Amino acid sequence: MKNITLLLLIALMGCSTTPKNESVTAPVLSHKLDTTKFEWLNGVWERSMRGDASINHFETWSTDSNGFTGTGITIINDDITEEKMWLFKRNDSVYYKAHPQQNETPTLFHITEIKDSFFRSENKRHDFPKFIEYQRQGDSLFAYIGDENQRITFKFKKQHERDIR
Image (spheres, one colour):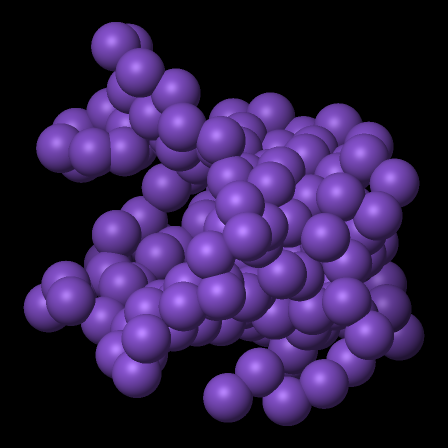
């Protein structure tokens, strides 16, 4: 009896509804960001500092193999600080990751809204900011950061490609 049961199990495992000449593959999950939704962010952006020549702020965004990479440079007199930023896809979600130079580890923000020339990212557990938004209007780029009590606006102007250091 044991032999018959074993033979039946082997026979059933060998049965397939797929013809031998067709291959069965698992669905492919894309882990690459659809960069077309963020192309408006590409380039070098300079922040207006209300005429203060001792302060400059630039953001540079470009496409990379996983999505987008950004670098923010702030120059105050002779002090330079840097922030690295990324837009990428993990599983079915899109994220904005920020790593300011002064922080030991980066902070991850889940992108909750994407429209033409706009995205909003959130991390409600982060101390500040709890949201980061970017919006392009013509040759201006606006970055907004904030929480439930305040909203801070940063306005950038599109620049010609140049070395920002």
